[in-house]
Image (cartoon, rainbow, N blue to C red; front, side):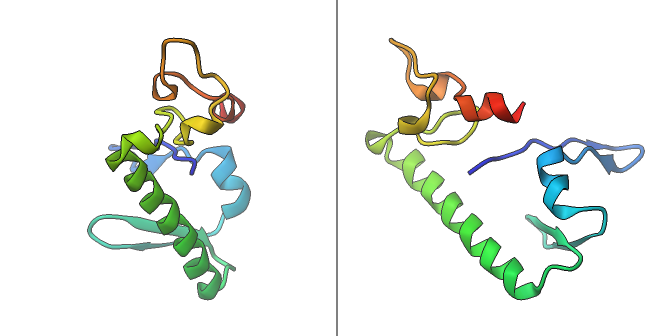
Length: 108
């Protein structure tokens, strides 16, 4: 699962949307918030497809929680969130959570 840090300018109440997100959201976006999170989706996307995407994201988050709670099963790369077995930047003497993987470099 890829995760983006998005900062919001307090005065302008605006945020930079990474190009990877903008590429599939476009310029017309709907937001459904609650007190803890918000779901952003393209205006023309059906709610059925929104729910399907949310199920995939939910599964990814549950997997991340599982891996964090049971480190003997593997490590999560702190930079990109990939399981350590996929981190190609793993160095001798360091676990993958200490270094960035190639997916992060391509994202930058």
